[in-house]
Amino acid sequence: MSDKKLCAAIAIAGAFATAVTLAETAKAAKAEQEKCFGVSLKGKNDCAAGPGTSCAGTSKTDYQGGAWKYVPKGTCTAIVTPKGKGSLEPLPN
Image (cartoon, rainbow, N blue to C red; front, top):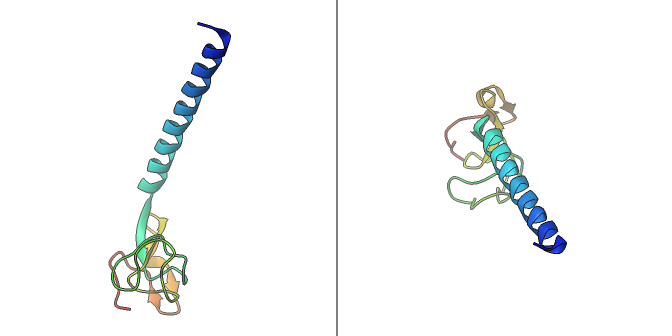
C-alpha cells in the first residue's frame, strides 16, 4: 500500500472513530435528560407537541404548554415559570 493510500485509510478510520464516539456521547447525554413541557422560551423549544409547534425553535410564546425542552433528569417539575411549573406531560396552551 502506498503512503498516500495508507494516510487516507488512517484519516478515514479516525473520522469514523470520532463520529462513533460523538454519537455515543450524545446518546448518553440524552439518556440523562427528560422532556419538560411549558418551560421553554419563544423559539427556544427542542421539539413539539400539539398545535403551533412542529419542531425545534417553533414555539410561538414563552412557556407554551405543548412545547418541550430537554432538562436534566429529575428537575422538570421543580422548574417554576411565570405560568407555573414544568410538566412531564403536555400542558394546555
